Amino acid sequence: MTIEGDYLGMSLRIAALDQENLAYFRHCALHDYHLQRCTACQLLRYPPTTGCPWCGHPEAVWTRVEGRGTVHTYAEVHHAIQPGFKDHLPYLILIVELDAQQGRPGALDGLRIAGNLATPDGDLAPPQLVVRVGIGSRVRMVFKDVAAGLAIPLWILDEAATSPSPIWRYPEP
Image (tube, rainbow, N blue to C red):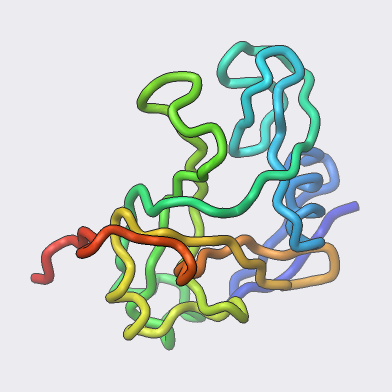
């Protein structure tokens, strides 16, 4: 079954044939984060795919993963290409390295998940929160319901975790 929804004016559609992404977003819709774990090498992978990027094995099982991690890098958007994002400028797109599977299979590898910085209720973060987040910030996952059976994983600042002080941010122009 195809899943369709709308997020800030953008149409979202996951086709019925896209079994890996349908399964991924079904877990997100339950606000329960899961990734595929290869049944051969036991490594987790993201994004969802039909084969392990590490060993090539085609079989995997969905495994619950804690949605906590560290900002690996980010982009601060000041010019919204999508009209629905215009009222939320500036906003952050984060690449977060999950705590799960750090440094495996190699020292420079990790599970890195993209998502917007949000408030706990899933709205895009306001400017006063945007300036508090940078490389090294500790974040945790929340979900924004956008349609029946479809929720988007987003990131919020993890106030309970210790982040470096000061965090590293790109210099302001």
